[in-house]
Image (tube, rainbow, N blue to C red):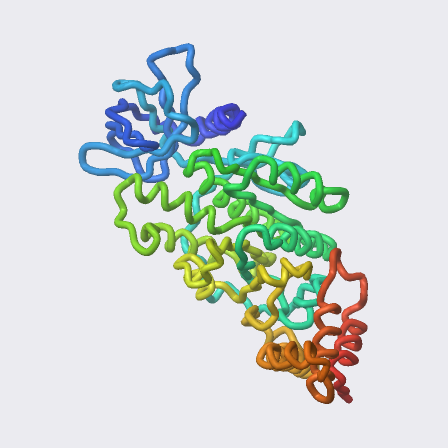
Length: 445
């Protein structure tokens, strides 16, 4: 299926370029192919015509060049490729369907439908990451997204154009929270570009069936590149999603760009980097990994001349190690992060948001003085309970929990219960503020 869409794209490109050039395959090195192809450039799309004509062509991307040879990463399995197979350079990067006609579809990294729905004709555009954005073309983020998730709306605000990460280990609820936030944004007239990278096929099917429904489906496009696909295909999926989000932004649509997970993108780029000989750094990650992640993040934001792109990235924290180099890098470049706590999840607290360890760097822009004070008081309560938890538990076990310790525990328990929710809150924001004031026993004039 992926092959067919690439062929269609190349047919359209023939009107634009005739710079086809040819070479041949020299060898293979793991997932990498080495070839001779004069005038090739990094990112160029190539076709490999196998000696056995009964086998279909294979498409590959140039990832490294030298004086005498190039290295390619194929989009499909290298099985059946032999020395001397003809290689045709297409003179362009891969182009994929863009624009609002993609909304309502579930597609693979090549824009080919996975749900059996026929795509209407869409404009073609390269998925390569464009040049850097002029920082003065951006604008301040001042419009709040009401997520209907109480922990976020009361403590960790998200604004239109903000880039925020959801940090958690496996099985703590990252995908569920991302789905809730996507649905909430779509209900506020945004469109969603959702990219699932490195997931199991079962998880993609579950996401579509559980979360892509009714209005959500009509205003969202889902791009999936599962774990068994080639690393260059997994990286292409997020580049495609970003290019599609930018095309929708230029059409004047407020976009929420969701990637689950950015860690899998980093792992795929690590495979590519190691294959072409980049030096490994911490945990084997190559320099191109950190460069790619920062370029992805910087493509999103609030802009003067077009609609905003709000980015929600899930970040897998392997072995719950929050000092992981990928986690560290992304915490530094994002506009905030939401930490999901495994202990809270094991207690049945969902969403398992650790308010004390979560941060929005735009709180000052998005909260008025009253909400900032309310959030501060709530954090003080959670922090005070955390510090005195052992003493409270001992006193409770001895039956001597009285006075200020009992009062602290009662207020803490009320707040923890209030923060839990299984679906989006339907309560108006002002009423939520009033409820939180009652729990914290504060009054504002």
